[in-house]
Structure formats: structure tokens, C-alpha cells
Length: 418
Image (cartoon, rainbow, N blue to C red; front, side, top):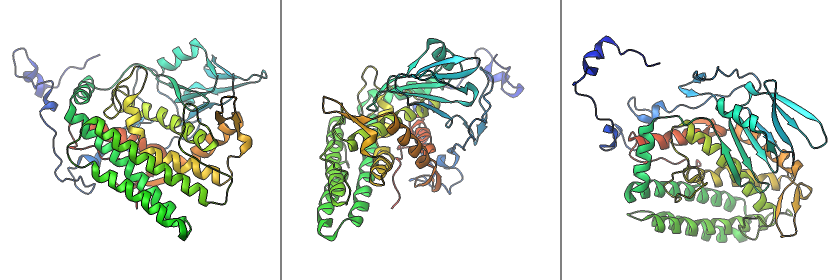
């Protein structure tokens, strides 16, 4: 129910009185008091960026439907307590206020629905219509991924956020200059993280191979310099693709220089051809589902992006947001899991099409280790403080929304600290 306006504003809301223009935020970005923005400044928009806090597992009490969720630091607390269904062919339904997962051997496991914020279905797990309806009513996101890590569908609750923010997003996405501005910063953030990863591998490489790593790093830095100036979207995507190829050549050198059985001949997807590509594709899929939820919570439309062109069924803006996190989170964890022996050959299945993917046990191991990896803290160079890795996507979605709204002149991407 709409509340009656305060007495001080009743005169301004009477019929015939002057009202603020509903699209006043389109009249140019409100430049911060200092640029680049500094977290030390009292008036800086980055000072009020909320960082979500952790939620103890199975202790989060969800408010009744229709009321606001509890907040910490000005942001809704609904980023943990994800239920992963890794059993192939499992059936997920609703039983007396709990999520019931029925396995193929007849066993059934239940989790209180009040303790779950996101449900991720892997492989051929089948949700019931009753479950999807209840999760949508409670604003619980349900995401389904293929065994290769590709997103099949995402079911969420009613669309929220400001409609004016989404209108501004659509306007910027359809205009060449604002769209290229965001695309350039997104690609720059990804290539900076690629350069940082190549630099780390160069330090760990034998002396005879360091020059090869330096060559690939130099090519990535050249692609970074090519992003300067006025470029269109096709040119930016070409620069991103060339820099990514140089980065994966460095990854092949890194794995070839280590005394392990892990080999990498190049990036392959749809389907992945080896364990390295299988792990990378699966990690990218998990990050993409988190990006979709983070953008929806920030009030943006995940389907309309700036770097990726709109396509039916593809979350273009979520793909844009994930770009900078692929080398920083997905590649870094996936390669480390293989080299440390957390994932072995027994955790992968190869099909007749020469495709490779994680089996049920491999997915379980990967998810457990990946959640532990995301619980560790990382330094955020834009905010100037440490925060858990799992909250970084939410912070970047908030920064993207503030750029679209006009509070920030540019979108500041997440980059690994030096």
C-alpha cells in the first residue's frame, strides 16, 4: 500500500505543481568529487558500496513472502546457502516445506526450503512444477546446468528493481558510444587479469621458458594498449579474442612446464575435449549463474549486455560481468585443483564424441573445493579493502548499476592485485 507523503512534501505533490522529470538521471553522469574515485572521500559513490556478509548455513530465516529480506550493510542477505544437486537423474520436489531430492537408488534427502537461497541442478536432475512455482514465489533462484557446465535455464521470482534503471540500461545498450565504453572497460579488466596470471606463471617457470611467457605477456599488454581510443564493438571483441588466444598459449606453456600429467593443447568447448577444458567450462557455468543472480539483485536485466550482442536465451550482461572473473577465479581455481590432485582422471568421463566432462563424484569434489576457494578473502582494488571472493560478483554488479544510473563516469572492473 502506498504511504501518504510527509507534510513537507504535500504541497509539491498537489495537482499542477512542478515535479521532477522522471528521466532526470539521463541528463549526463553525476561525476564523483574525485576521479578516479577514492574510497577515502566522504562523498565518493564507492564509499557506500555494500559488501554482503556471510550467512550461517541452515540458520538463515527467510521473511514471509512480500516482505523485505533482512539486510546487512544495505544489501539483501541472500548470497549463500546454495543447494547443489549433483546426482545424475535425481528428482527434486517439494515435501512439507522442504526440498526433497530423490536419488536413483530410492534414497531421499530433504533440506528446509527456508534455508536455501539458490538451487543449482547439474546434469539430468529433474525439478517438479510444484518446486519451480514455490521457488518463484519465494524468490529462490533455480539454475540448471548441463554436464559440461553450460547454462540450460534460470528460473527466478518476479522482476524487481527500478524500471527507470532498466530503461537507462536499454538506452545505453542500443547506443554505440555508451555500449562501447562499457565493453572496453570489461575487456580491459579481463586482459589485465590475464596479464597478471601470465606474470605469475612466468615467475614459477624454469629460466629457459621465461622468455616465452614474457612474449605472450607482451602481446596481451599490446592488446591492452590497442583498447585506448575510440573503438566500435566489433573491434573491441576482436581485441579481446586475440588477447585471449595469447593467454591460453601461456596456459599451455605453464602446464607443459610442470611435472604433472595435466596437458592442455588449447581451448575447446561445446564440447570440451580434455579435463582442463572440462574444468574451465564447468567453472564458467557456475560463475555465470551467480552473475545472473547478482545482476537481478542490483536491478539490471541480465539479458541485455554491452560487449555480447543480445540473443534469445543468452544472458548477455551476465556474460559481460563474468569476463573479468574467468582468469581471476575460474582459471586460477580450476588449474590449481588439477595440479594439486584434487581432481584425477577417475573424476572424468569421455564419450564417443571425444568429449570430456566431470562425473557425479567429480562435480561433488569440484563444488566442495570451489565453495571453499570462494570463502577466502581477496583484495578489491576499487574499494581498497579485502572481501570474500563469493561477494565480488555482487559488488561488481552494484558498480555496474551505479555506472548505468550515472553515479560513476566509468565502470571499474575487478582486477587482481599486483
